[in-house]
Length: 381
Image 1 (cartoon, rainbow, N blue to C red):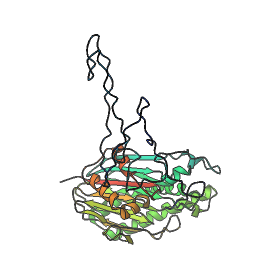
Image 2: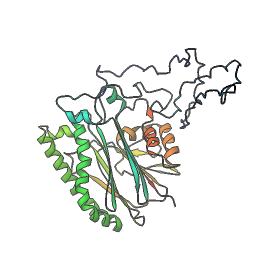
Image 3: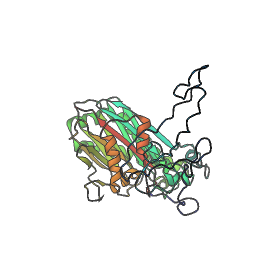
Image 4: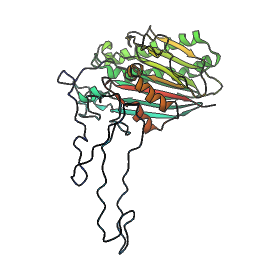
């Protein structure tokens, strides 16, 4: 969701990168690196200098010059570029204006201890039946700059033969939306788990109408309980406003159907060899490439009657389903370099957790909201 600028009421000035006017480890000037080409970055590993090894008595240092000779010139230490893995990586010609790393730690404001306890970043994953899962929820650059807590949430949970993954985006204009986003994914899981066997049967038989009826009731129950929790905190339920979208995945590889439900904005996209594809029938924004996302502003707990649901029945081996909040969905739609960057990696192989986290937070100028994303890699044939 849209977030406020920094505490000064305006976006920060361009940040001086940490390698500006670099110096060598011995204090001498460093030869500037060649400018990186204006292309989609690749995750090339940073160069690693070999550790110095002491010379044996009367001998030659390992990898060094013979004893008694002048030492070689200091190696050139090149500053990292946006191609180097790490939080400084970005696509686009201009670097984002906000700092690349968290600055202030979020403060406990107005007695809201919960907001101060939320971590900056969450990463999760594993294997479940025919799919491999990677999930991340990352505080946006603007929230980091303003020392505000992460308002997004992500969840990965299993119940017997069913996997539930979900993301939620707290409404930035509401003061307690971080309660709402984290609460709704937890409460959805609470109501889905006792109904896992029934949901699994509906996915197996492809009963779309019955799936819609049951998921409508489950979301309504979760929303009602969310409103009750807000009132126990002394907060109007609207101040906990949040979006929600989720996928239900059977462990049985003979059941290709995937259940989808959503309230509010965000994205559900599929990545195949021929590119990105929208799977949210309510998508109404795009860039002419056929990649669409939903930009509806419906929010829970109030909009519990506006659940959208569907069965995805044409799953193929090697598909990648990408479920995300609009912090990632919007730049994916509007920035071709980001689509190419992520498509070139997620469409090639399943990354490890740390690599997935780096990929999910590759930065794009002007897109500084929280990001939550869950990717499901279908097993190849």
